[in-house]
Image (cartoon, rainbow, N blue to C red):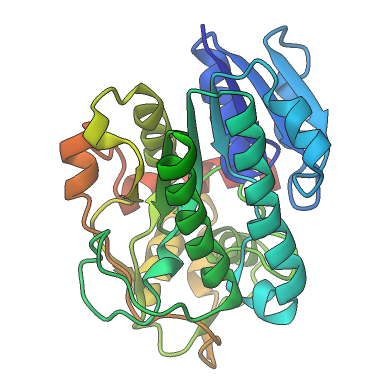
Length: 322
């Protein structure tokens, strides 16, 4: 039995990680300030004797120190996501994503945790046009959010080299799946489009819809976090990995898949019109990951490609948004 701290554990990715490791019989501590996470995401775990909730903010070092007490592994998911949010409010994004991240590193170092595994981001590739994206070749960041996630990698590297804290960064590529919030100004595209289709509202695609992404289902992300905990090869730690499928889908294709799956559940969705708007600031045209490094060093193999993941996600939203 391990004792695992999941920061941002009430969020979309964090709550899926909480659920997985509780099912495996581990002790899980969730740290969340509920700025973007939701209590209903962790409600099923509150009566589990192996689950502990700490309501607090990673910007407070004392809270971080409390959270890491007796912890074996930290899965650091807490952050303010969204490129547009960071463009609108770069100061808060920096406070949470950089200062909060540094607090967690310091607390983890001082508590002698075995390994600090953190959510990095594909946004770190910035203006690099090379495809597929390979971990050691990045460009210049295109948004304040991307800068914060790159700084995370630099800090993690320094803490590994200077203090001996084992770190692994997981560069998430467009993660989607159950519990991803469809509401709010910064809702991710898949849950937003699903909700709009279900409400017979026209989804608005930014640009022509030819931009492509390596959409990654949540179960693949959970697998990567677990393999990062389990890694025993020295070559596998103190580095970063693409966390993706290794395949890309255009926004037009994505909307087509969603419409296909949802129309089976509600035939009226077939007639919902799709609209196009302007491109979004800070967006990169194409994203495709090489997952060779994760396969080689972590034994990672994605279980869900885009269609399998979307089918599961659509079924979940249908059950929970109706």
